[in-house]
Image 1 (spheres, rainbow, N blue to C red):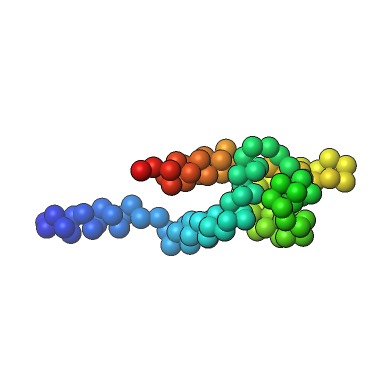
Image 2: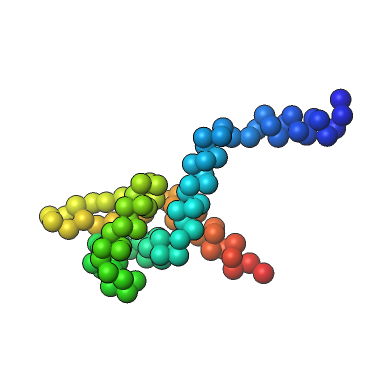
Length: 109
């Protein structure tokens, strides 16, 4: 068998499903927004409410809430309620790891 054909067959057999690749692309598209990257960075340091995030990022609360909704839809952030206040944090350690690896990559020379 031709070695090129063997390599192609191996790669094709190990490729993820199309739906999974679409989800990965959507995840990276979500992470590709600078405002959402700032929110993820802030939440990697501490859990925060919308008003604290808005002040930290020098944005209005409505704009921050909009970005948090997008991040929540992609399962990048989660919420916790304390009375009337909703606190946001990263969904799990994978989100922090993704962000850390991306940061290491851009800082490489």
